[in-house]
Image (tube, rainbow, N blue to C red; front, side):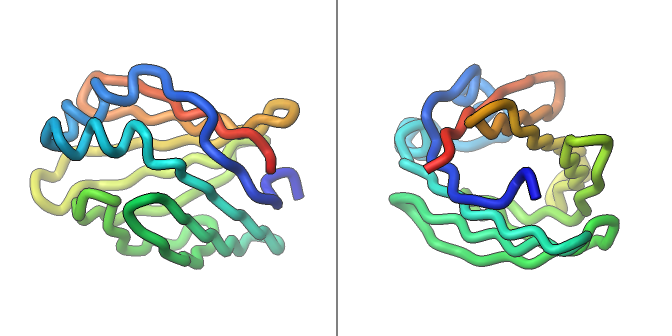
Length: 132
């Protein structure tokens, strides 16, 4: 599948502003901007196994397209939502448990890059990963 592989963050676009809008304090924002995040994605049909490793945490997550699950963001924010496929794009729609606001995340592969986009409360950002 297109998403299968290991991806390492290469660059960010408006990521610090996005984190600020999410309510993440300045110290965590500065650290997160240089977290050396690496994501490994294994897709089998509509099931995904994702491993995330960074300077701050390591986790593994299993999800099935269209099935709601609970997740904690790296800063501890609790969300609930699901991923779906829209064409070749993975789209996640999540609701924050603390304030009910929606966070939308998309992942799309273009060449040797995985582009992960975020939208929250009027602020958009991207993290671009290179295939390892």
